[in-house]
Image: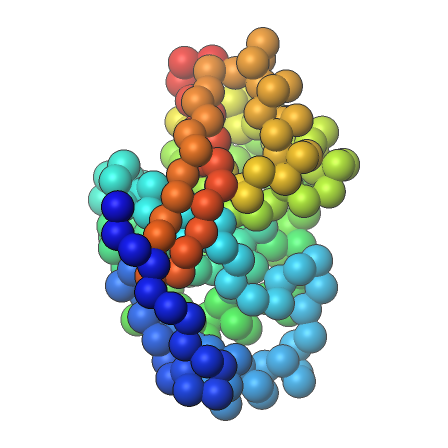
Length: 215
């Protein structure tokens, strides 16, 4: 196992860094400073979350096919969406309830020379007709409230009805996520993997894979 590198002091961090092949603007970048003044975010969409790196690492080992239609739910700044478009040449839509996250997403998509389709909706607003356009659902750090257990369970039911093939969700083992995984036992074919990424950005948690085709 690779050893994680020591953290770089914030004062010495470059304005742009690269993680798993994706270019990221740090908090000191003038674009990010400007966006934070003009587009203050809500619902925790104020940075890249560590579960995105877990999800990217899992997808690197289990890549989707080229041109797969992917929906990143609770996309925030869209790190995993950008990774899937750039690394695997997939068609990706990022959905979030907070419209103010999308200027950050589009700034990073432009930096990485990819296009991510923006979609402003809550999880409850993702109906069967909308979900039917996608083959794969992905998401990281999206089960942080107890109420999201029911919300995501119902979303999975609609995704199955819509013909979505799989959902892949990463989480740092928050209790609502753990409860959701246990709830799936009698309802969906699924696996939960303990996942660790030592570097470049250390992260650990669980990867939930829901196989709607086998459910």
